[in-house]
Image (cartoon, rainbow, N blue to C red):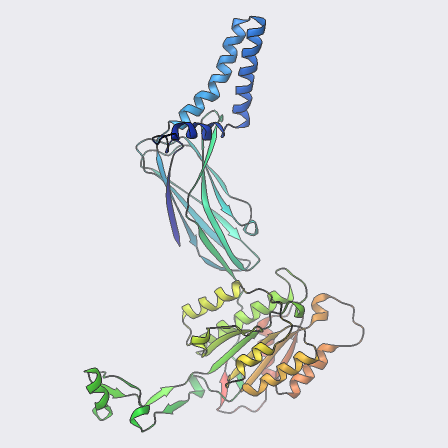
Length: 452
């Protein structure tokens, strides 16, 4: 990702009516502490020289006052143009990983620059603002610098605009100019590779469990496609050929992808703690790992939250197909900005999935009360295989154990409804739990299994 922009030096507006006075006021406002001290000392020396009648002191005062004023005028009359570009490598990083930002400054004027100081604005989560000092850039020359940013928190963070500070050699005056362009760094959840397992379910995926549906015999049900070299001429569909003006053949068989819904419980009341090691962040990372893994196995994946909002949206309710990098990018970008909701129930998610057969349902749930446990149990009816990872609220909140374990009771309820339900405690790894879920599945493996 690359952005660029250009700006002129401090005197860029001097040619306009009234621009000269405004420009000078702007430049004088950029006097540094040293410049203001010299100017104040010069004025004080001039007043003392007038009161005491000391001509030598007056010359010293004039020199002290003239030095910062001369620097201001020189900086105001400077005429050069510079352009800046920024590139990110990469523009999307997992939480806890580093990205490198490359800055390039080009002097496109005919004069060399003076002392330049670069500062790039970054979000406080990414670290301190990087600053660089460039001594001199020759006419037509360029300088390149780079810095690293890192965040343990998901999100989209702006980088820029790049600020250029102009200074005179004596440090009497500094002016700050900003480019208009900025970039965005996307910090996505950490994705852990998951092992290939086979869950028993009704829907079938590619590979060993491939399912094909024959097209119906009626002309109204035929889905034609263009003729390809090697197609059997007996499959030519003459009505479509006449309609489209090119040779069309019947599409006699269509592969059906396994469908999967990854449900993420984002209710704030269901998760304890905050920060990168909180229960909610574990659930988001687990959902990201499951979605990326299933996309890589050829599943049609839909990401669903407790609010009933799904990705893809209503126009793509069937989910993403295949393991394309674009689909993975959309899922990770969505999870990068997913925040906790104010909802108190999972009924909207149940309404979103109750209309069809989900094939495989993978849920990452927070704390469940009796009512929400019953809602989750009913979701099992719409899935061939249902796997739930329930975060143990007491363990994540580090509350004292009073002998009563509500998580165990909820898990038993989900097991009775047909779920493969596992508790999640701090320190558990998604890959290990994924493998354990496979061991808890039915030991009877049939050809109708779902490979995940």
